[in-house]
Length: 151
Image (cartoon, rainbow, N blue to C red; front, side, top):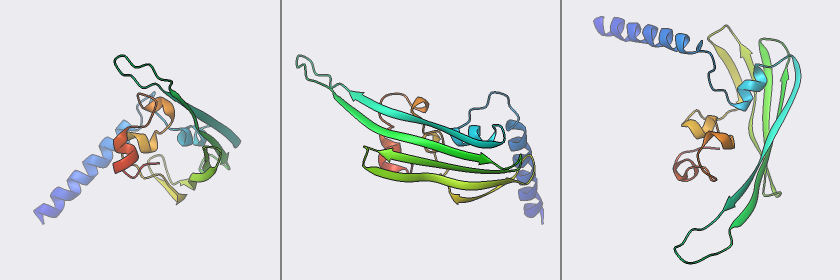
């Protein structure tokens, strides 16, 4: 019985700490969160990525490669302050079209939401915050491209 109470106490404390950290001002948000927290109605956003990689060798000067990597479009609709729809469509290399995320969210209260649809797995910073400004360098980190199941 003591173990059950101990585990229950830890859960209550951890949820309480989580609730406190959610109220920190200037918390980083990904684009989907920004769309959901905007005004009611239709929201449209997006970004594009063009990569330039320049190989560096001691005395060899070679041309770099320019790559129009992706164009991402965000569409969101805020039905009310409690119900939102978000989708992210990605066009890679002008040949492939992917729906990276598409979900509907209902806010149960200030601390709990219900989401259903195609969701990003919250594993690592690059998966949830995968816009180009979230990582250092031109390409996404190798671990997030090859090992972890990221976008």
